[in-house]
Structures are given as C-alpha cells and as structure tokens.
Image (cartoon, rainbow, N blue to C red; front, side):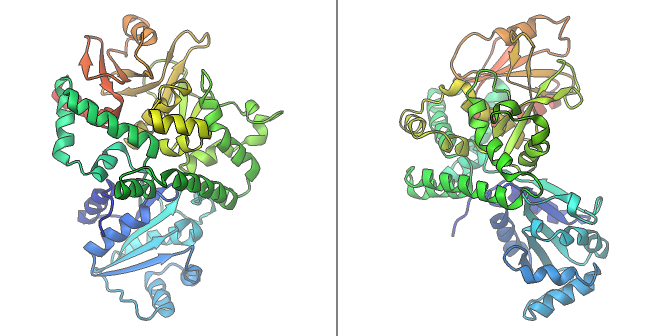
Length: 450
C-alpha cells in the first residue's frame, strides 16, 4: 500500500550510509508517523529486523535485567522469541516506545561500542524523561526530532513533484512573482493544509477520499488522545494543571498580545503552582514556545526573557480543531483565516519555522508601540519577520529598518502575507505558503554572497 512520503525517509537513508553511524533515537509527539517511517525503512534496507514495542510487548522490558552486555541482550530477546533471526551486520534492532523502557536508552552505549547491530529507537517526547534514565548514552547516540507533516510533505501527499517545488523556490531566489495560476493553486492547497494540519492519519484520509469528510472527527479524537496521554505521562506534575494550560492556549492566542500568563489560566493561579507544567508540554512536542527578545541584537539564544512567551500548537490543524463549532464552520466553508486576531497565520508560520530547525522569537516593547512577530538570522544579520493576516501598513517593520543606528544588525526584513513575491528595497514579501522554504532561501543567499 502506498504511504505518505516523509522527510525522515531521507534522514534514515543518510544515517545508514554513514559507516560510523551511532544508534539513532527518533523523538516526536504522538501519532506523527515515526513508527511507520522506520518500519518502511527497515523492510527495504535490512535482511533481518527485530522490532520490539515496549508499550505493547511489556515482557521485553526484562531483556536488560541481566545488564547491558550486547550478547546477553540478544540471548534474552531470542529466549522470548526463538524464531527471530539476529545476524551481526545484517540486522536492525528497532526499539519502539522507548519511553516505556528507560533501560533501553542506557543500553545504546553498549550497542555502539559493540558495533555489530544497527539500532533505532523511537518514542514519544511526551513519555521520554532522561532524568529517569540511569545513563542516556551521551556521545554514543544521535537524536532526531520529527514533527507532523510540513507543507512540503503535504504537497508531496497531493502528488506534487520535487521539480515543481524547486520551481517555486527558484521564484524566491530570483525575487520573481509567481504566476496567477501558481498563486491560486498554492493558496488553495495551503488553505487545505491550514484546516487539516499535518497529522498523518488526517492527511491520509483527505488524500484518499478527496474531501474533508471524517477529518474533523479524526482531529477531535487526536486531541482527546493527547489529553489522555497527558494524564498518563505527566509524572509528578498536577495533571489537572497540565490539562488546564493545554486547553487555555487557544484562549491566549485570541488576545491582542497573545502572551501566555499563568495568572490568567485559572482564578487565583500562581506561577509557583505551575512550575514545570509549560516545560513539560513543550518537551512533549505538543506546543512550541515563542520567547520575547529583550534586546534586538544577536545572538538570539542568549537574548530572550524566559518568562515572557507565547505558546503555539505543534500542529495548525489541531489548533483549528480545538476551536468552537461556529469557528469550525466559518473556517471550513469560508476559509476566513484572517479572523482570530491573526493567531492562525502566526501559528502556522511558527510551526513552519520550528520544523525547519529554528527557535521561535518575537519582540514587543513595554509600551506596546513596537512589535514584531518573529525573528530569524543569516550569517551576520538579524531579520524581522512580519506576519500579516490582512494586507496593511507595516509600521513596526519600517521602524526597525529605518533606524540603522539603534538596530545596526537589522539590514532587511521579510513580510509574509497573502501577497506575491516582491522586493521593495528594504524587505522581501513572500506568500505564507512559501515559509517552509525560508531557511533554504537564506542559506542560498549566504552562499551567493547576497
């Protein structure tokens, strides 16, 4: 059966080609397609595959009880299931649901030093807590974080080819507007992506049935599954508080400044009562934080306020599915994404930036007179990124670009909106749907010496 093409497919192939590859741990939120991608890779690349799911096959948790010697682990595996074939240099060991067996992570150092077997682990960020692991094999494993489908993967699912996407990218490099047909088709596909998001089950149903029928029900179930997993994996935290924060995120995004405030989560809520709650949701891959920069200077990572942040859903489709029924009807029928104070466009842009490897940052001065949605950087420039739900003035972007003395590291900007590609001498304009190519575009500009 045909499956969705994922970017992790190439990551896995590249990993296997490297002669010195380490055991690989693929992490990510629940139900984003980790297991399916690894299984497909394993079937096509290895003569023998041993797949163990520590959540469903709990008896395998005992394979590490005798220690972490590789031969002993293999003996214990075949003791439980003697029909398995485990041959050195021909076998992939796939340990799924890593969070259900912390000892497995400890064993990765032994497998790396032994070198006879390839090892891939997969687990939900929601359940992986390395503080509970005796030794997480630092230096003897590599980690890869996987997300739900980005817009490029969605286009692949719809049948678009690499050369077509390369054509769109060439327009960005040349700062040449897309044709009216290209704009219309990509806008329509992006509107579909906004409603559906990138959860594989939802996208697969849409592609197979060529309609939205049943997709909202799937999304609602995914939201319920996430809540169930929160109550299962939240550990020593107050599960009710974790759920309360999770459910309030759309409320904060609907406000003008979108700032997340513990005091507004519940009546009388205090920050000290919610210590670790937001971090847990972030570490679980359910939400993405966007921190406020204290100063508009590089570097970004050392220049933000950890107590001033916004929270965005990790999947735009799940955010929209969490809204009330009237909003659902409006969005699905009228594609009226400009409502909700721009939060929907900001959310999907944040998602696309994080999926490219960026950390998310914004800026808002104390007076509220200067605000910028996101910042990225190139080799030596701080680049403001403005997201416009509707076409209008770009006062903050212009102020940042005009005051060279106050903001010397800001040399040009980027405006994202329902507009074609353009350049006015100070900032580039790109349509929302090309945001997934932004990091590649910046990299090419650096290589070209632009």
